[in-house]
Image 1 (cartoon, rainbow, N blue to C red):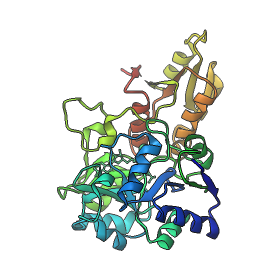
Image 2 (image 1 turned 60 degrees about the vertical axis):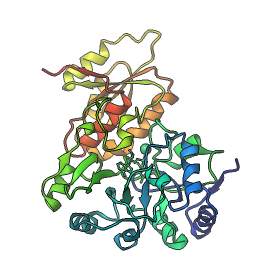
Image 3 (image 1 turned 180 degrees about the vertical axis):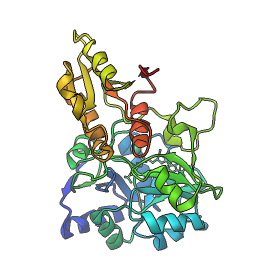
Length: 342
Ligand code: TXA
Ligand code: MG
C-alpha cells in the first residue's frame, strides 16, 4: 500500500485530514507516543487500524479530541471528578474511561460499554482534529506487542507500506503512553500509570485505587479491567530481564555475566556506565524519571538494532513516574525478574 509521508505544516495537516475523512489510517505525533489514527466513528476505518497493527480485536482504542466540551458527545455523562481532572490535566497525558454514548461504534470500544478519551498536548494533533472535525481513535503506532514509537523514524520502520499516511512531527516529549484511569463507578482506578502520577491525581480527587495489573502479572482466571494489560507488550525481539538491585549489586551482577555467544546488553543508569564491562545502553540519570521515560522505548528498539539477545535492565523504583517505567518494563520482560534485594 502507498504511504505518503507528510510534514506537520498547513499542507501536511490538510492532506492528513483528507485521508482520514476518506476512512484512511494516518500515523500522527502526540506528546506521549505516536498514534495510529482513524475516524473513531467510522467502523471500517477503525478496522483498518487493527489490521495495520495486527492488534487483537478485543483490545479497545482511545479516542482523541481537542476539548472536554467536544468529548461530551462521546459519553453518557461526564462525572464531576472527570471535569476536575480535565481542567487540570487536559490537554495532556491523561486518558479517562467513561460510559460510552451510542454514537461510538462497538468496533472502537472493542465491544465494551465504556470509552477511553484523551486530549493530547500536541499542536499538530490538535490542529488536525480541529480542522478535520473528526474524533480520532488512535492506539500507539507500533506493530502490536512491540515498543511504542517515540519518533517519526520508529513509525516509518513499523508502519511504512501498511498505512495511508505518516504525519511527521518532533520526537515525543513524554515518551511513554498516557496515564489511564477508569471513572466508571465514580471511583478513580488507575489502569495504566504514566507521566501524570498517582500523587498528582490524588491531589485533585482524593483516593485513587491502583489496579493490581499495574504491577503484577494478571491471573489468567481473573477479569482484566484493561484488555491491553493481558498481552505481553512493549517487547523488543531481544529477551528482556528486569533486575531489582542497588547500584553495586546490579554492577556486580552484569559484570559476572559471560559474554559468550549470547549477546548480553545492560540497560543501566548514567552513574553506572563507567563501571559496567558488558555492552550497555543508558536509560538516563537514576533520579531523572522524565529523561528515562523519554529514552525507554528508543533504547528497547536500539537493543534490537544492536542484535542483543538478552537485555538486563536495572529496574527503576516503582514510585511516582517510576511506576510507569516499571509497568512498561515488567511487561517487556514478560514478568521475568531477578530480585537481588533482600
Ligand atoms: O498516550 C497514549 O495513550 C497513546 C497515544 C497515541 O495517545 N495511545 C495508546 O493507546 O497508548 P494504546 O491503544 O496503545 O493503549 C490503550 C490502552 C490499551 O491497553 C487498552 O486496552 C486500554 O487502553 N483501553 C482502551 N479503552 C479502554 C476501555 N474502555 N476500558 C479499559 N481499557 C481500555
Ligand atoms: Mg500500545
